[in-house]
Image (cartoon, rainbow, N blue to C red; front, side, top):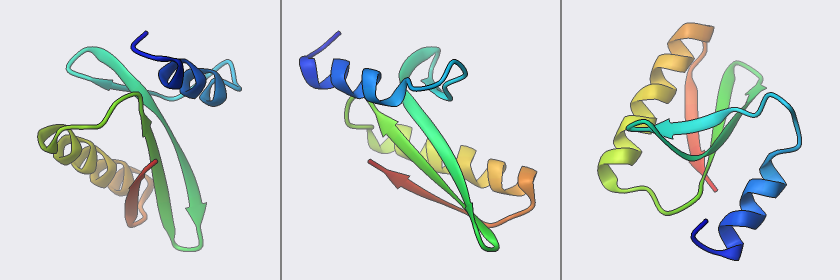
Length: 79
């Protein structure tokens, strides 16, 4: 673990047995959750460290694909 902040984030986000993990290039980089709001889906990503521009674009692309999968426009927020 890199810091107490990372550890606190992991504990705060691990409230379920089936946590949605954010995996980038084969590494566990955070967690994510989704919430359907009206006619769209909001995807919230909580990375353990700041994402690079390339990683952010990759996550945005994955969120777009997820929106297509569920048949709703999707929006990304990074917390």
